[in-house]
Length: 454
Image 1 (cartoon, rainbow, N blue to C red):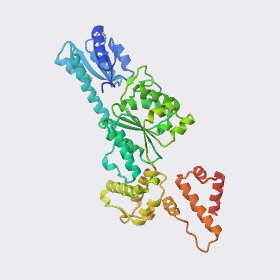
Image 2 (image 1 turned 180 degrees about the vertical axis):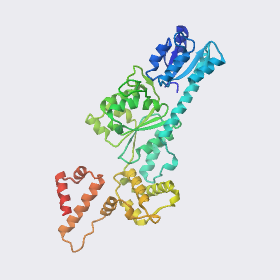
Image 3 (image 1 turned 30 degrees about the horizontal axis):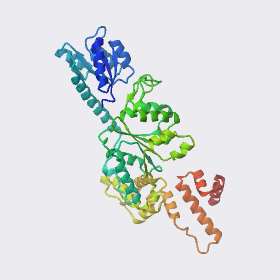
Image 4 (image 1 turned 135 degrees about the vertical axis):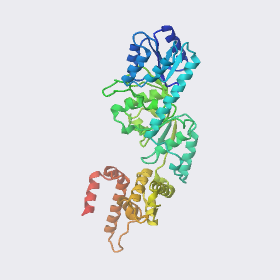
């Protein structure tokens, strides 16, 4: 973690301060200096210093008083105190003030590095525990093994790209499981012991995107009452998964490209860059190449993130995966409610789900199974527990049933009704897209829907 930490050396003796800073710079740290407590507090107030190495005996403001004032200002920089006058009382006073460690002068350079690395490990564990409380990485029992040739090939690709450090672009329709594949890549990579941070680029307000990704210093903008590391720094050593990367505005695409190329980020409001070591996995349901042609996505960033591409086919193109996915989600729902007993599904319901086109893919299936389990009675899921839209659209995939005595006009009308409802459902209720798929104008579609209701 040493490449990430920003250090501040605080000592009123210029020679000691400069020699220590030079040694720490050579060891790979970003180091700044302060000659007294007031200067140190002004720098610490920006909130982006990770560790301060502070002399205790300084004129005007002592090291311990500097630490106390920093804590009173809610500055959470970790302090390692230095002194040439070792005493138990001094050490106790420093620790009570909130110091993490205590070093006796004259300093041994290897000992200083060792203490800093120990402290970094402690800070990293605190960050990891906080992150784990907010997310669940998942494990093998949350992965459904799909038998289709397409998914077997996808698993092969994952096994090839996971050991590398290359950026991966995962493409596929909404709901196909791009996040699951990203987690699988991280879990089977050399970075598996480090953080995995997922973020949906389309869910963050544009005004906050830069701060979310790159962090900010205290006071960088209205409301920035405390410094923020940012997702790149939080994911240091691990994997940052950027879902819906096609939603990023152009101005942020430039900064993302720079972060990828330089392996550094500049927090908002800071004049200093921070080195980061992050493996990037990105995903989109949009056609980035077409966006490049329309100048909605930077060509240089596209080539940078499209080093390795994994495409997840929609569920309708791999129907053999539907039965195991149904059983997988049903089993998972049963595990959530063990007291209710194991719930099954009748053959008609399963047949209907296999006939459905699943425009929302795996995510839609997960929601449908969860809903059915909630509504089911008598220990089995029946057709009545499934959404009406699914029962209608699944039934319409077969040839429309019309009475033999019906006229040709009636048979054509029945076929047309089924076809229109089928396409509207496939488009998730979006009638404009449905009209486009059917090759008719939107006004024509509305007219036909009105005729159907008469």
